[in-house]
Length: 235
Image: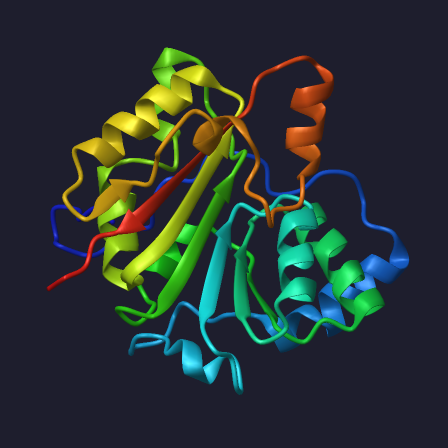
């Protein structure tokens, strides 16, 4: 976060939509009744301990910009022993995920319905074992590139909260964003690209579910790239 002339922390500038079409009555009900039970606080005076969010999770993962939650819900269902924090400021996407949580009785999801950067500042260090950033807004226009989530500042914040050897997955169909991300990771001392051959970036992660944005891109004939990085050990 930046500092103003009086050295008071300022909230990062948010770009993008917060709300789309009017929610159906039941989804409005879920936003009012279910969301407060799953919310992750970020305005506390002490760092949020992930152990306080999940009763008996073997480890905690995070998906940043989960969209409609297809991938997040699939991971939660496949790994009930893992706690997953989903970050998404788009109300309609949050409501969609809540409907899946209710339908499938998923107990291992917590939601941060605001700019993920606010949460990164408040999570306890060395607490996240895996991070997903899948098909986030690529901000393709050159004048908007600085709005991209992947940059040195957010990588610094992520490196702080990620465990040693934690995995970071980044996928997109925008080739300029791929070049941008590879450059950012290459110049960051705390991350290493996990790659042995072309299949490591051409094929979706074996245990991943497709998001609606990925599906749309593939239908349009676009090529998707799937990158995987590891948080370098502190020792």
